Image 1 (tube, rainbow, N blue to C red):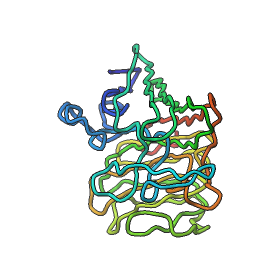
Image 2: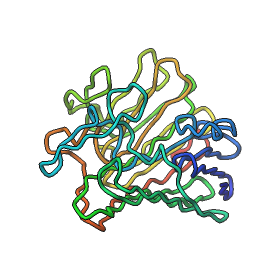
Image 3: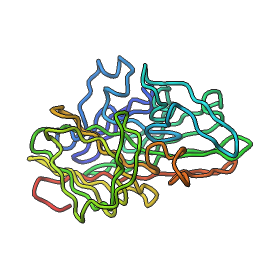
Image 4: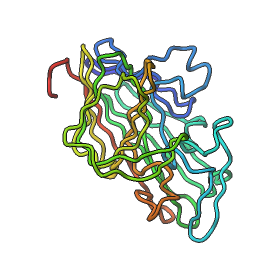
Amino acid sequence: MRLASGDTELVLAPEVGGSIAAFRWRGIDVMRASGDEAVAARDPLGLACFPLVPYSNRIAHGRFVWNGREVRLPRNFGTHPHAIHGLAWQAPWAGTANDTTASLAYAHDGSVWPWAFDARQDFTVTDDGFDVALSVTNRDATDMPAGLGLHPYFPNPPATRLTAKLDGWWRTDAFVMPLGHVAEVGDDWSHRLHGRTTTDHVFTGPAGPVALDWPTHRLTFTASANAQWLVVYAPTGDSITAVEPVTHPTDALNLSGQPGVARLAPGETLTLTVAYRVSPAGTSA
């Protein structure tokens, strides 16, 4: 499924977890390049971006309590001890498209996550990027917890730099589970992602656009106001990085106050929007 406008090309793979297979600008792979083999393997972890629905990142041991009820989710990532990335990334989506827009849809019957829900992604390609709206609607008879996120991968050569306005970050354990919030980062935080140590943290309070800079181009993205958390994953010496706008921190369902977790009444919808824009290197657009 290919969309294009001006300098932008967006290739979608709805059958592979509602993923983006490629995002190119002037022939440059802005997100990680993934060819036909990666799509054929049906592994979203090998593609450019996938949606996080109905929760972001990890839930400790797949367990949490909601309305006094203990919920247990199965492991969904090999021997990893925690439930991870939601459900929709591991299921096929349906999709329709024209030259510049596409809509993808996924329906969950309540068999694993114990609430039925519908998820939707609406894409619009522009001359210099694309907009996406990711939503989840509670189709069950009782209130449902919900969160959303996008998990894009980007090329990470040595010169890659991330800049954002942030107000804190979460310390984590060996399995990237939160240990405590640190209320300091510094205004206009800038970080070279290709470093000697692995970065894998949830940051808080992104205000305004987040920027990624490469020698040839700059990407900025602006998320909706409910995306008050930003996951940054940059493994040591790796050629990729993930910079993920999300609506709640890791394991929010087990944190005090369940920060960022939406309570959706039957029929209610939660939406995350993100606008991605690309410009030549050295510009502020």
